[in-house]
Length: 495
Image 1 (tube, one colour):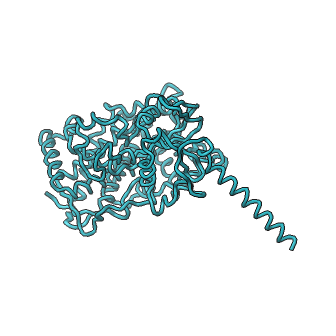
Image 2 (cartoon, one colour):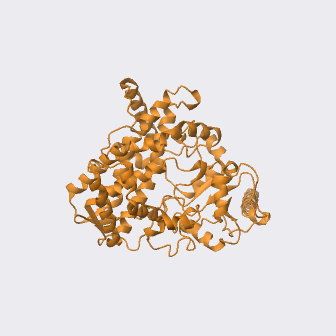
Image 3 (cartoon, one colour):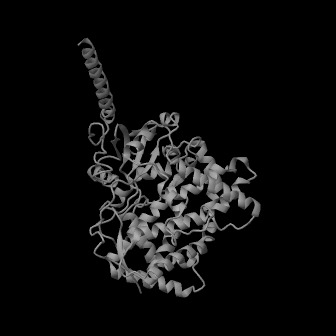
């Protein structure tokens, strides 16, 4: 009996301490006197995220509720206090004007035990600065334009695979563009011939689709809230089999290139390989670092490009007149350059690019950007201050769907991105790739990759809804990157 009483007292004590910790954590913004969204016990403001709601919808709801009341508000990711930035001028200060105060993303990385995390996205501080200096020249526009012929070859294979199947029936568009983007990445980032469009069950595709351990918001929260503990426990983001595969692949290709001495700078992998032999030790990359930079194309580019291309084709399928105008533009540009596409011709596809940008606005792949404050920061023209180590969330998807910036935000209207309309909007009103010192270095390449793929498909094929096409569209709430729930099928016909 005495044992039971002690056990009960211990349980009550533990529960009381736990309750006190939770309530203290969830009263952070109230104690500071900061306007905030009232949190729910344990889950903060993430109730239903990953099951009933997508993170995009949650951030949009909070943004619309508090926009205009303050430059930022407080919110909670489970027990973690976060700053939700609402004002576009503050967004510009954080990302551009005063970016020195917000140098870090705060994304978990553990390079010593998880070598693929030694990429630019997951590095901060001195490690990021060194990598950035070494890798930035790789993404210069002149170098990227040299890869256009390779993109055309991969796109031609996609075109051929679709022609051979000659389907008047439903085609899983998301799978088609996934194979295209995987072949682009395998060819240009890893230096191996892409075969996924001809054989969807390649080892590269299996690893590119299974590298990440089961994702959930709680794991993301744990890594953000307790990064040092996670490193002490040697936590790894990526599956061991995938890590071993990509490291082995890169080492093998580096060995082959070392002996062949090919001086052909038409792929990212070849330019990364040059950094292994760089004369400056600070800019020299190890095999593991090269593998991590190549892997970053899968980590940051694969799902993003899949999402944008899939949704763009979906939207054009619902607007056949707009699709016809895009096709006429593509064919007109192609007739002017029968020997193949070049950068100048690609830029002439203005309507196609507007459609792509409107897709990135309406169906923003990543709902938010993350930044950390390095030191106390007084918000200009206000009485507010952001404290050191505040975690900032910039709700990109919510900004993209703000009716004051984009009237009728649920409407797909590429004219929002003609030159005149773009000039009239705040420069921070469109942020699919971020801006400032931590923007996506591969932005120009990603756009070129998607435009070439879309142009190849839309030039000779028409897309339309079929009985299996979801109308209205339903998103997959379990994924961080915005994606359709289940396969997205469209009817495809050669025209």
